[in-house]
Image (cartoon, rainbow, N blue to C red; front, side):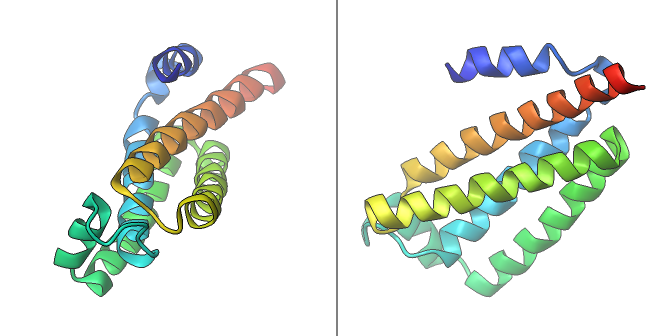
Length: 140
């Protein structure tokens, strides 16, 4: 389903705006890195716990925040302010849902949940971008 969804949204994004994917993928990974070092882990011996144990949390958080800002700037440059706003807002909503679900259902994050978040964040951001681009074509 993920690949079909990706194919669908990519078919709606014109070639001259495909650069937005760099911002989308960077933003989702920055949020994922922040979550792995900042949120509670579901299992102390899991993959997410191992990665966060070896990481300097404050450094990862600072770099993640910087990459969020850089990815937003990249989205703005490659696709415009409306697409940038849609993607950042969508990533935030998906992240909040991921955090809520991981804590409520699993007691924390796991490596598998981090991958789940990445795929959802990327697909929903691309869908938001495709929706805004399609709306711009209709309205302008």
